[in-house]
Length: 361
Image 1 (tube, rainbow, N blue to C red):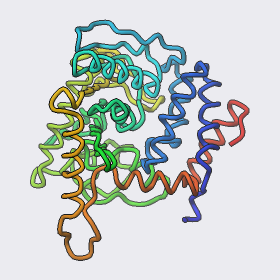
Image 2: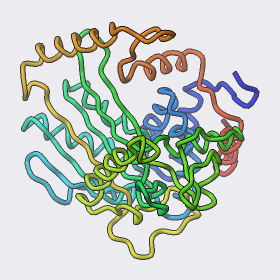
Image 3: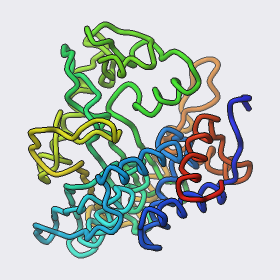
Image 4: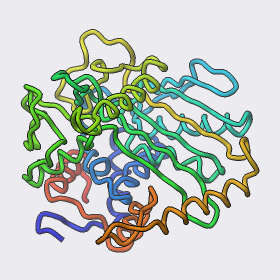
């Protein structure tokens, strides 16, 4: 454990976060949901999207860009699809409601697809996708984000980190859960490096001229995150395509702000002067596995798939092949027992938030 890191019990952070959301004016149920979604990131080791983001939500609320009491509603639908207006609510609250709509539709007709507009940052994509697992469904979750990413060959920042998550149930084996940004690294990881005063690995960012750099603060001086692949030789065009697909499904389809018109997460940057939509957008899918084959057969074969990959021959020096979701499950078990490591700069941010609302961490 680094001198710059503090171990904080999960329940302490959960309670503190809930009280912050309550102080912002969120109803009890929404505050509880938002804190659960937020802390799920820390539990799963995605520290960039957990309590480190709490101060950002508070600042957006102070800027009048988050509605603590949204009236989330369906504005367009068919038996299997819907468009949801999040009423500028916390994405941590809007997204689970929208995913539940997708699940409810899948219960009735086999699949459900929901696109969301007028929302905000929704935490980790995996939380929402995993909601489908308890219903023996495959869950899909995507969102667009602040424009910090340059398409291949560009110096302009036109896309967000635009993550994709998919959760697939199994039988005796744990579920398959993939959750990843469509960039080489998420912006939150750069923020963590900045707090640690460390350089970024080669291939994460470029400077304002489009030249690769290891400066973790490059975005502050006009630089940009790079699509998955980092450059054309390493197939950054594929990451660019993936990020574009998420942007279109989440925002062009729903009526949210897309591309460079997506609203920034940081409160000190202005909203686009020429908006093309409302807020951030998300996209969710839920599919009943028994809509394709008997549930027991599917789960049995998912177990077989997982076991075969786990038993794959490994390269020298590696113990085993990992199944998506394995590292996060192991980290969650450890952190529930030992506590969540929180960087000292994040502790400072949390204390600032606590002082604002007269709360103690």
